[in-house]
Image (cartoon, rainbow, N blue to C red; front, side, top):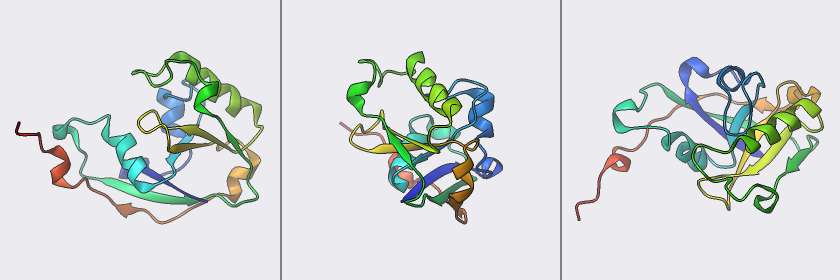
Length: 155
């Protein structure tokens, strides 16, 4: 399975360090995770929702990662989550779920529904899991948002 990661060039290392330092929707501060999405377009949307037009970084890169079939993935269904799981900011319960999963070392990958498009999936990769070494991160390529995405409706 191929997944995608969008980040700034300075954060190209796929070691989960940014998530460890700052925490995220699915992890508490101190827990390293690599956030990826099932498609490049979802990775772009996941990044985009955190931006204002003037904050669009000029050094974005898109990185593919291949998760072999031998790597076990745990799937979380939306029905298993708290009713407010799509709220902004995400409820603390989500960070506790992801952190507990990462600490358990049960699987190397956790698949969760996207809060932006619940029918699509994000994949959290645990760099502390022994199967992490089987996941291959490909070459990064420059990425930029199409300028039309910043247009405002003229109604």
